[in-house]
Image 1 (tube, rainbow, N blue to C red):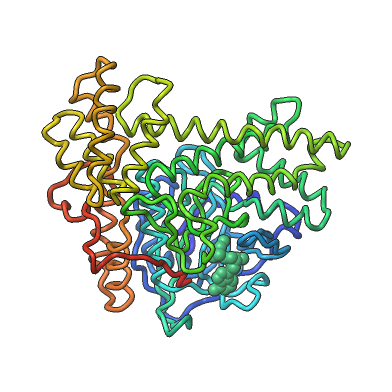
Image 2: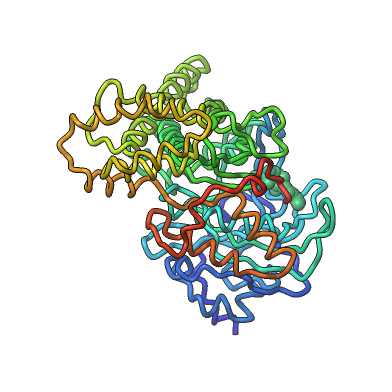
Length: 495
Ligand code: AMP
Ligand code: MG
């Protein structure tokens, strides 16, 4: 029967030395039940959705069966958590089943999260609550549909076993797909041990897997650092452009492949405010919305430190190289952000004052407590028809005068471009989503599933978020900000 699964595993990470991971199988659970399978993703991975949904497939997704070709491992890594270095973290509740090469020739990790304790679990139980599994499923799939690099969600299985957090919660296992699960913290793990041989092996593995062009140049490790910086800068700019707040940007949650990874108490902003923090565990606001670009830079500096022994034999020279490369981060980030803001504002050309024009709109949104997503979406309507200006203005509840002062400047800027209103609206609607995973909607979906076993709200939310740029009248309510009594101010790890 196992042949039915027929997963074409090819496990490059498991071929690295034994000190990179611990080999162990997931811990079986009492009563696995498949609550969600991502059929489109399965097909993209070259897997048979029918086989995955079969009893054998579900056993694999729950960790009750190790499929042929799978070489389950928990990866070793370290990391700075809220600025404090922890020399050993590692997959405490995740197990990499193996890698497959997808239909586009891309190597992808298939990992179970919540699959039982590992040698890296410390005091944790190795499990995940159904709420946190479904949150990661919803938000990661929404990010993918928004065109933002991210890990994906292949399946969610409930375990039939309770877990204990603040109270008793149903347990679940998420099957996560990533370009890899290598983190800044993976490099830190070996750097902290002075294991330069492992660092070199890891860097070579990453270059072969994610940055093959770096192998062709004279200084491959410098090129690797440069490439990771460019991807992280682009990623964090994309987060800001949709109002996403990761919530736990520790170095162990910073993917070397440049994907959004480790969704915890993450959230999207409703009303724009750069100081927004949702995570209940982020009491200092270290990972607030507008701090994210600076934190990514800090994380990349930590990555650069681990590469020093590879960058040059002479320590001073290595440091000079690392600093020079790190110095490019800001320009990458600013370019990505300004380029994105121009598109959000419907600008086809570049002018000196564009950054200030965008910033002044953001300032007006802060003053007016305007909804971030809807402001840009409705500006797209206003671009085609000035009669829609009032719809935008209405979002600046607290201080509409701030918007009034800004609007003529935007109109003036648009007048210097030849595009007509309809094509501008189309271009703006293609980058300004109408539907994001608003926290109150996510909460409603998680509560219905976790407390009542009702997955209908979860399914409908996924349907809406799969096409974030396409207006669909049936789903009009999903575009709306939360009513006063449903506003979410804090997200809990609830892990
Ligand atoms: P996170 O903040 O979720 O990225 O997790 C940070 C570290 O804690 C990682 O090493 C996780 O594997 C570990 N961890 C989180 N939750 C658990 C758990 N329930 N059991 C064991 N380890 C965990
Ligand atoms: Mg993590």
